[in-house]
Image (cartoon, rainbow, N blue to C red; front, side):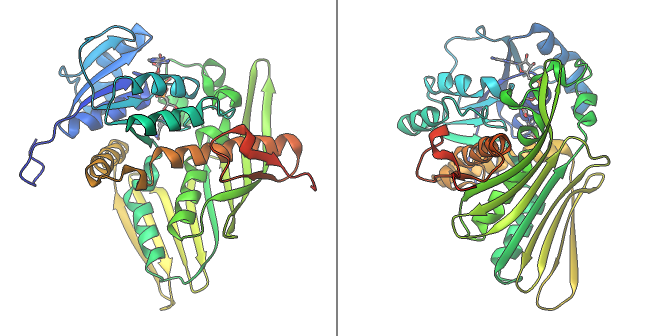
Length: 379
Ligand SMILES: NC(=O)c1ccc[n+]([C@@H]2O[C@H](COP(=O)([O-])OP(=O)(O)OC[C@H]3O[C@@H](n4cnc5c(N)ncnc54)[C@H](O)[C@@H]3O)[C@@H](O)[C@H]2O)c1
C-alpha cells in the first residue's frame, strides 16, 4: 500500500484472541494494508469470526486473514507486530512469550494485566532489554477528540489547569449485546475484579484519559488514590459495579474519575477546568459523533464535532502506532506500554483503597509492582 511518502510499508501482524477486540484489530490492520493472522484457543471463536463477527461488522469475511488454533499455525513465520486481544489474565504471559519471537512491537489490550500486577515489571524489563516496543489499547487518547482537547490545553487557552474530571459510566448490557455467545458477567473475566473485570478494569479508559490530560498539562504521574468501590458478590461473581476515585499527581493536581457498569444511557465525558476557562470532551455525544467544547479568555463557548465509527477508532490507533514506531521514540506515545502499566497501578491502588478504607500512595520510583503501593498509615 503506497502511504504517500514514496515507500511501501507492510507489516505482518499476529493477533491473539478471535473475540470482539481481535476482530477490530485485525480489520484495522487489514485496512492499513498489513497481513494479519488470528490465533485463538477456542475453534468455535475462530469459526464465529469467519462466519459472523467479521462479515457482520465489516461487510464481508477477508480470506487473506489466517485463522489458527493457538499453538498451531506456520512455525517459521516471523511477525512484526503482536496484538494481544485475550482476557486480561492471559496478557502478561502471552506478551512475555511473544518477546522471544522478536517482534518490533506488542500491543496489549486494556486493562494491561490483573490488579495483582504479577509479572508486570518483569515484562516491562524484558521488552526493554529485547528492544521490543510495548503499546496498550487505550485507543480513546489517540482519538481526534482527546487530541483536540489536549492541543487546546497545551495552547494555554484555559490557563493553568486547576482540576480534572473524567467519567466513563456505561451499563455493560452493550458489551453483552456484542457478545451474544455469553450469558452474562459470570461467563467471563468481566464478573471478577481479580481477573481484570468490573468497572475499574473494564472502563479504565477513564482513569487512563485522566492520566493522559495530567501528563499533557505537565502535572505528572498519579501518586495517590482514594477509592470508593461497590462490589457485587453473588455466588461466584465478585466485581465492582461502581468505582469513584480521587486522584492526586506528584505536582499536586487533584481530580476525580468515575467509572461504572450501571449508567444508561452512557456518559463518557471529560472536563479540564483551568484558571481562565474549561475544555470538555464528550465521547459518543451523539451516535457516531465525539464533541469538544471549550471556553477560554474570550468568554465564548466554542464547539467542534468529530464523526467516527468504532472501526475508525482502531484504524486511527494503528496509524498512531505506525507513526510512533517510525518516529524512533515509541516510548513517548500516550499509548506506550508504560502508560498502560501506570493505569494498572491506579486500578491496583483503587482496590487496595477500597479494602483498607483509606488513601493509598503509589511510589513512582517503585516500579510496576505491589510493593510500590502502600496504604497510608495515618488515615
Ligand atoms: N480497546 C477497547 O476499546 C477494547 C474493546 C473491547 C475489548 N477490549 C479488551 O480486549 C480484551 C478481550 O476482550 P474481548 O471483548 O475481545 O473478549 P472476547 O471474550 O470477545 O474474546 C477473547 C478471545 O480470546 C480467546 N483466548 C483466551 N485465551 C487465549 C489464549 N491464551 N490464546 C489465544 N486466544 C485466547 C478466547 O477464546 C476468546 O475468543 C479484554 O482485555 C478487553 O478489555 C478492549
